[in-house]
Image (cartoon, rainbow, N blue to C red):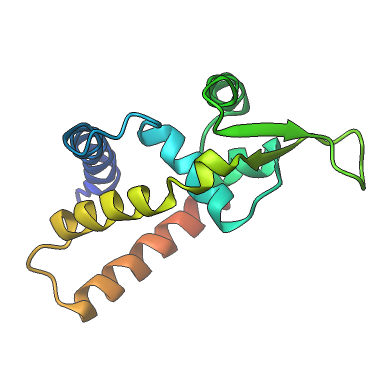
Length: 143
């Protein structure tokens, strides 16, 4: 049986990323780009995250993430702090400016979700996302 799941997921990611960037541009949102949006999303869920956890949650390599965090820090979106518990561990926090961007980000993700799921029933969306979670679990087992 010939399968195309990996190819299709990669293609959806590429095309979806371009659409995401276009929506950001149309809405005149220039405070962050798509990959930075993934970082912000994780930090909106849980602020004060170590770089290693941020790397795992975003799927970005630590080296890529470090340079992106440098740019985000220069743009006043995040700051680094050693925290109180383990002074060796650097934690990443959102600035107030970044916290205020969450609504704009949610509007963009809602718009792109409508594009992704056009013509799908709620049941189909749930089933599809459950399949994707299973695939993700399978590949994460190999890390």
